[in-house]
Image (cartoon, rainbow, N blue to C red; front, side, top):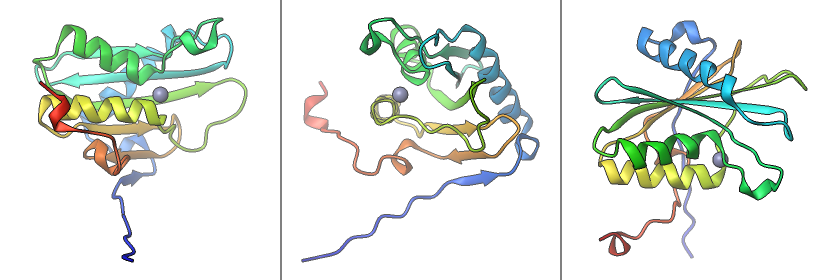
Length: 162
Ligand SMILES: [Zn+2]
């Protein structure tokens, strides 16, 4: 028997003001995206902003539906939009934030497993690390330099990609 230990690395900042101007801007774009969240059931808004290599920024938010499983997280709305419309313009950084009137968020929202899996495939598709900023409004910021830090045992099989 061999025992393995996996460690992940991420940066933590106590405030958005510690980030570069570009990263602060992208976080604010994710906050703007909250406005179009359709979340009448959870009342939990999530916004995402993708900074592409060309400088273009894509916005997305969570979209719920009365038939609950039909909704989709902000991250996947953003990434599928990217894949459908801008697949040749690599994603440099993705910023994600959240807001609810039900309680105060004290730490950054982290993405669900399904979104991490989709992030991982987008990262593989573009052949470059996808930097992710998780931004808690008026709170800390966590940054990873690649999705594998979040999902070390992600499912991927090169032989399935043609
Ligand atoms: Zn998700």
